[in-house]
Length: 145
Image (cartoon, rainbow, N blue to C red):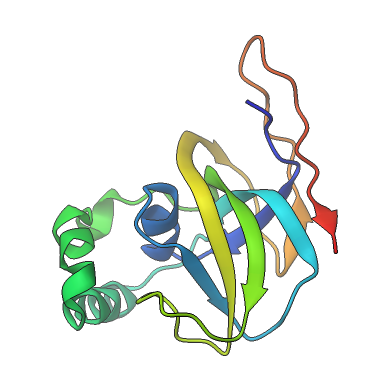
């Protein structure tokens, strides 16, 4: 498995929902030309109000109820580090995904959790040196289209 070098910071519980295969769109206000594998960094901050708002969002759509049932309790999220990776395949301004609220969505596929790596986040895409598991090679640079 190639470990990407670029990361995107996402607040919890959204980061958990991405790396556990529930959330296939990450909403942003800006477009990107970046496509390819990306590390998912869980931001340090998450208030109880934000957690409750996320739970309310999940409860509004019958397609998201199973994700709500799977969601960990507020205090059980890892924060302030890399929690997984996904493949950013497309930047869209419309989608039938229940996760899309716009105005821009990053379509994500092949998401998976990785062992937690504490590190600082940043705005936009940023570089992280995530150690490759034994026998694997680093790589997965992604590309600008």
